[in-house]
View 1 (tube, one colour):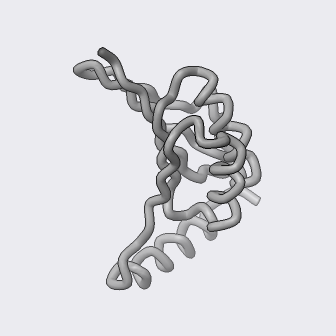
View 2 (cartoon, one colour):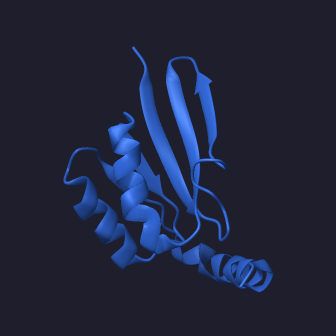
Length: 106
């Protein structure tokens, strides 16, 4: 029996289809899906569900409202997880975010 899940992460300028990485291993299909703008995450999640994805994890960089839009869009058809950062990681996550923002195309 095969399972399929996807991890969505923010990547400005990326193409969610062309830049997707898919790994099939030991009956598990893992899709790493870049999302160029979090406003597109809900529609991308719906497409993934229609393709057979059974679980979606969202990067901690997605805002809570964006996560809520994804949950609403998939209408309970698959579980949605949201990676978060522990209190000890907040400073490091903020520093990463600042570097990411500084190097992202406008």
